[in-house]
Image 1 (cartoon, rainbow, N blue to C red):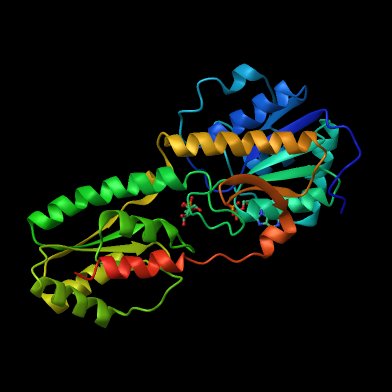
Image 2: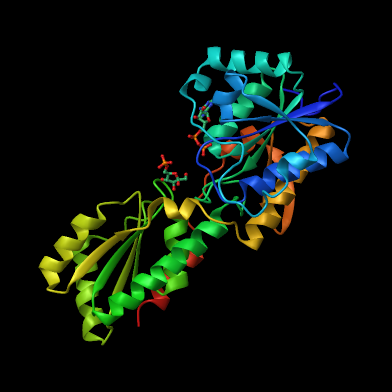
Length: 329
Ligand code: ADP
Ligand code: F6P
């Protein structure tokens, strides 16, 4: 597949796909206004790949993205589209792009959405992916749109639970999002001084150890015990009743849930998302295709989708071990 297409890019499309993330609107705005500044036309595709297949497409101008940078969610709506995963669905989507003269497409989403972008690139539509997910689980990049807002939202909620947990000398299990990734749990655990962090990536704990840790910490004089549990580990309510039965310490579970996905994006999410959207527009203009925008070593770069999808991401080992040390005493 050629990385540098020869055709002139006159019109690009932009869509948001998969789970929404605060900052997606800033990215869309970055795409739209950079494209217009560079003399390209822009079409907004609503409801992700579903909207592409169903031709839910709108013309966008500079004012279409006015008053959006501070808003959470995505003004283009998002969806998960099973039909698009099939070759027939992808053929149809590529055909719709051609019908609407969309030469290039910016896909804002996660790994699943990028697989779709790659499949469209093989069908002759120039594509660029922009990493948008609160989970931070895209291997090629140190930053994903929405993570910063999500961890700040979760951190504030955990601080509040901690107040009441301390007052009642309780143990609290607080479940944060991340079905397959524990980055939110780890960051929140560090930021709130939690005693334990449970993630799917590291199974170096068991309930017996957890209970012993709670008993030991109580003997040390700790008046609360905060456990941050990743969604992928789950069973927070069950865990709470088992801990209470084993320790005699009043224990409560709190699941923060979708609150973490919404809300006004942080400054970092607005700025980085704007930069990523803008860069995606720029590289489409240059004729590049099958690329993902990433943030690495302090710079916004673009890399091959195939290469990016082959990479694996783990929890930061230094942060993981540090959390354990800092919560020991
Ligand atoms: P994310 O982009 O956040 O990882 P999903 O995994 O739900 O979210 O993917 C979003 C959409 O991308 C899916 O609904 C589907 O339409 C498309 N998609 C996901 N996986 C693939 C795949 N393997 N091939 C083509 N398209 C895919
Ligand atoms: O990928 C983002 C995310 O919020 C995950 O952290 C979570 O596991 C999942 O999406 C929940 O998705 P849904 O929108 O289906 O509840």
